[in-house]
Image (cartoon, rainbow, N blue to C red; front, side, top):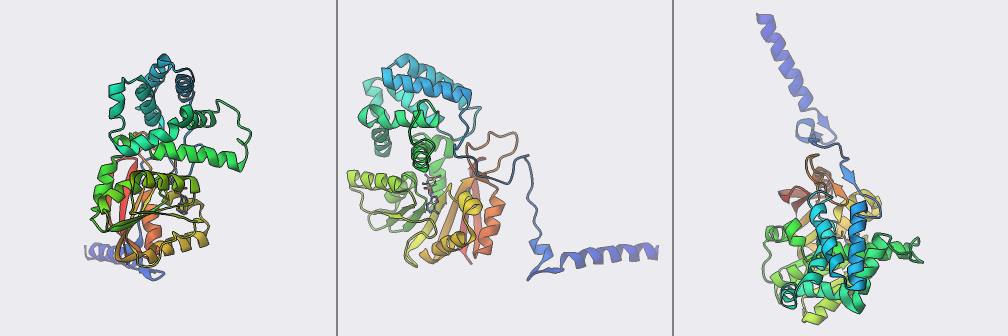
Length: 356
Ligand SMILES: C[S@@+](CC[C@H](N)C(=O)[O-])C[C@H]1O[C@@H](n2cnc3c(N)ncnc32)[C@H](O)[C@@H]1O
């Protein structure tokens, strides 16, 4: 009996010794972490140039939208809308279908109903951008994205950039984004106050920028930071149109955010970090994150919103995603610790970090 007790004690001691063996400068027991795998998908996925594959039904719907625009056909707008009703619940989550259906419903609405589409002035600007010159940009988007027309530059970098710009624009300024993303809950996490300063890093066409601008008020400031000039031109044009004075655009080369030291209470990155993680060169990532660290005030907060790896049973996000554990781990290395972690839909998470 005594031998059995001794054996058990020895086994417990061995396990404890293993657990507290130092790895590098830390203890194994505190550093060993496992990511729970609930899906056959990879932990990080960057996807192709097309943010989501154009399926047969997606292409059929796009043809109807194009016909509705070109020939003012309400039948085509109805047919497209019906396809989207069927596709939205079963195809990739958060894509452009809700936006394209929004346009179809607008085309089908009475004059009185049309006014309701623009109760949000930023939705009105979004509409104007695509509707200008008899819907020239919306037609171009459909033709480029769904390959409904040949473009001389389609195989060049300029052609790819043009398609990516139009696609980002339609995806990220989607007037129905709240519906799928629960934007207001994400913004609620920040608890922004009048007078706060925030860097919207990778602002795109400013969907979040203008929401932040309203919350921080006249005494606050929002930096809209992006590498793509066309997005920032649009942000500037909207600011000018509505007399918004607390938004400043900064075009960067991607390896730093271009904000002076100790300037911002918040740095906000939505749908960007997966790129930094998976595609940036190490020196770029080092200087990019260092520039965020510098720009943040001592007690400043870094918020990373990104696309989640979902369980097999969930509809996946339409584009790139990254398991949040990879971001948390990498930012820990760069001197940020996670203070809170939220998810309002399975396809997106919100990570809140402070500087160590
Ligand atoms: C997927 S969009 C998201 C836009 C916006 N954050 C939103 O959620 O509405 C990502 C944006 O980040 C920009 N971007 C990519 N790399 C960047 C970098 N290193 N620095 C700043 N912006 C970057 C892209 O041009 C693009 O507009």
